[in-house]
Length: 299
Image 1 (tube, rainbow, N blue to C red):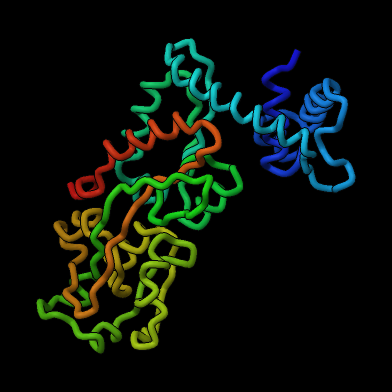
Image 2 (image 1 turned 60 degrees about the vertical axis):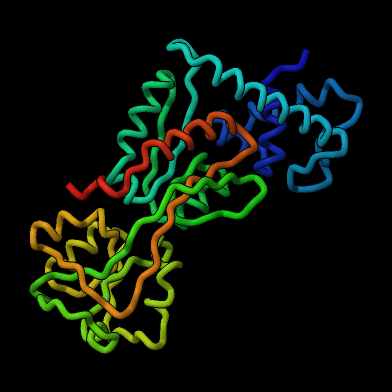
């Protein structure tokens, strides 16, 4: 008799590339994975893994079994979604978001997920975009909300919306109303997010533009910290307008009119389509419904 755990072990060993990685993902020991694979292979007259390689590579027969295992995992996903009762078996959901999401509508999203799936184990992570996408590729998280697309056959991307970016600084640094020229902008230090952040790729023309040689820059990996630095008069910065309008209302920051226009920040939901795809699709739709960047920190 074949077991689901045996097929699950084979699928994840072949997907992640090693017995150790599969054990870590399934939260069991490497010896447990080896035992399950051994039991599975014992039911076939030929090996399922090529033992001549250091890597865990499937044989032709092993690939056939993996295809069946993947179908079984997808069917299990459907059963999990169907069993939404309070006594449904718990499962892990590893969600990665940037700080803008964490500071706005993430609490509402997590509360709604917990209400719909009482047995779920939530593991939210907050990081820069580059770190989140890297962990998604490595299967260390399952679902990401960030402002960058990941083009890969095993990823699904869903657009959330755009956020307006504006130049800001302390009124102590500049209190005029005139539109600042490029030369005027370069008189101030630039406060900008560090490499790996969500803004760096789309603001390349500002940060790495030889026509915008800021004499001094201060890099930081936290947007709220950049707002505080700007509010203390340490330089000009680029921030989402809606998120930091409270600073403007309180008189701590002001929006600078500049001849140098800024692009908009576009957000996406990204998740894998090779496991739990139906569940992820439902959470993505929930995220689209709850997403509210415009009013999150404006009040």
